[in-house]
Image (cartoon, rainbow, N blue to C red; front, side):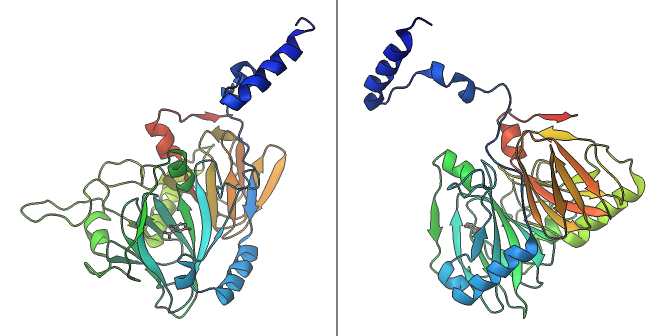
Length: 346
Ligand code: GTQ
């Protein structure tokens, strides 16, 4: 580089900056990296700690007043983003006995994964899903939803949403129904009966209430756990994943929502996976057991109900001390739709 080039270039950059122009050659490799280098950090939120703060919030603000009483789990590598990864959001929501979280709908799609309590519900378009620990309940974008807790115990669940994805596209709309709950449209469990058993209704002259392309919104722990245990007792274990089952949309066999995929895993006591990485930064919830997640030179201890985030393209090894059961969600659905997804067994 000739001596005078650098000051001349710097001068050019300064002159054109007010006109919103930048030289690509100074940032090309950051903009088009050879491989993903996420600013997100691997991180763990220990359930007991988050729960203490959440119960404090419960003393200070009602669910109705807060609309959603949630502690956001923001990735420390993504300050100000409210994201746990670049594309996804995670929070822990508390509903105390007798409370309701008012009815609204928005473009963002959400999943609920229950961590504590029993008998509270999420209602979707006026149909209640009564929730038990480790149930998965969906509120896909655009559908009315409200939450309530008629039980006598606090209910805590993880909210997983595609908030950063919708923000990326500047495509988010939201509205309140203006009532604390949606009028009941059908009894609890109606959709589960029709779509939750690998079957679907034959439509004659009676139209279905649920959207035909995404009808099911409740995946019960009792069922997924039974399926996972049966798989673990008979199937050959995958050395990179352990036993793994993905939650499906029964309409097409695809991921549960357009922007979010979810699965569960079981690792027998003493099992250690081989390292693997994938482009979908993933949020894990420990359902049961103890173990470790090894991420490069970092070791993250895993205990029941802890939440752990593994950023994109970070090699992950999972080690089970006792039988380890995990729930996980990621943006794999979005990435596959956009032809971006990659994974690598190491
Ligand atoms: O329950 O609709 O954690 O809209 C964040 C945004 C939960 C919800 C969150 C939301 C919700």
